[in-house]
Image (cartoon, rainbow, N blue to C red; front, side, top):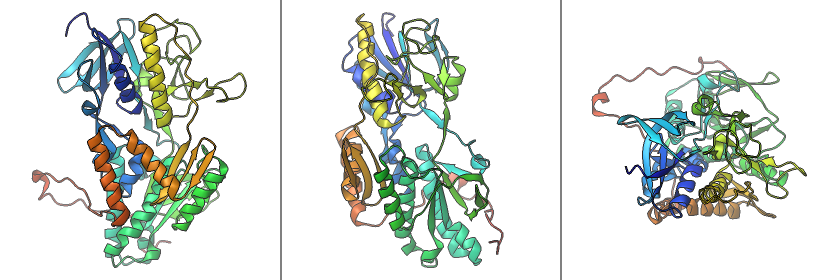
Length: 456
């Protein structure tokens, strides 16, 4: 590498990181280079993970290879885990397939997202299934198919009901979407399991609030609850999970729901790297200045602290300075959603170019275009500006938006074909277990019964 190369290093390959890299590579010329470092070689479209759970799409359809998304003239991708950052020397260390690499930078952008927090409820870490990564979604789908297969082999009625009871904790976007997908998947798959009765399968959604989808208007939250209930989902509002056990979920108030499968869609915790950097944090996220830079000044205006550090996406706590985004005189914090991650990336691209050209940077300001959620096959809710939609129009809008967000024409066509196929044919019930040759003859692990026979 030419020693004259000046790098903008981006840590994290999610919506924020890849959007920023693509925006910069179109505007920078040598000697500037964009270098993106990510632990994974792909970007996961997290809003589509529920569709993997419900077999509406295959896992490879919700990921996009980062190398395919970037040009090569002014950008480079390194698959590795950043282990340390030295803001004074402007270097970082990344653990890669070739060992530890030291990478110098002119500007460093932290966009490494967050992790699932399984410490919010006792027993969550031991017994619940988080939905944060594409591997989580595939694991939940396989678990559902395993439960159906096992119900056919069990004779105890109480055990069969517990195996067929799927509890989803959290009534936000992910919780609502996975509950709807689960209900549809169970209804579609049951025809292939003739020894499973319809009343032995049910989905319960627990929301510790008075309504679903608190980010949307109340009318849309109510519409989402109606849509889910019409699909047979037991929507429990004001229901807080107090403890998760191997065989049940204990609710505040004493009720106990017998269930062998609990899906968790609540809570996030900081990426461990955020804690090691020693930078200012709040609510477990890196606190940014108005222009998305970070430093030792606690987020105040000015350029004190570590110059050249920036943060965007879920790992950053960013104030939205758009008019009407918060109470008068106080900018509200931007929500950790894909829409705002993309908006922050585009705003930071402008600010980085401004900093390079010695021009003033601007505070982040973005007016929300709305929000959407699916509630199952052909159903959803959406707010676009003042327009509120529910049912099929909202579902079509949701799919159109994420189809447009997909990179490359080829990937768009593949997903469109898969979605079109799914509108007319039953969901795929293949249990995707990738057994290697050396493992083919290994004895199967004994299955532990989640409930004792005849236990209520």
